[in-house]
Image 1 (cartoon, rainbow, N blue to C red):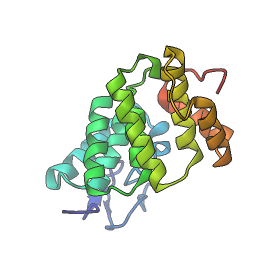
Image 2: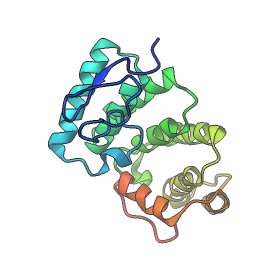
Image 3: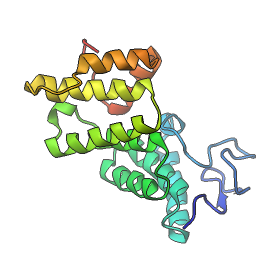
Length: 197
């Protein structure tokens, strides 16, 4: 089992990179995608170039969590959510203690739609992933995302759940969620932010 890409060429310019490269030393592009922010402003041709590069890496080592995670973020940006879910899940099999993997996997389960429209089985699984992320790191944005799900899916459908979305909003505030993080979350979710949040 591998835990890191053994060798990789820059997905943007093709230059060979050292084993631990996160950014290309020639074109300064990300080599390994570790956050959604890295792909947020990428053009479609560049994203496709990155997907092609990671596919090559995964042909060499399909269990590589760094390549799986990088590919998952590209698929999220491309709105190919089923593929993103598959890649995040495979990355978690190899690296189970990285909270953001669970967080972004939970986001992907909404498939770019409002939580209100998601099937209950997806919501249940999503909440398990949020709780897994929170068990690893007490992060405000995790609580805030959970509050959104509890509001849009549970509260709006008149389900009584504990904690409710107001309690989760308070936990998010206590854990230090920022206004910037909130607005970025709804950009990633690709839905409008409810007024009560």
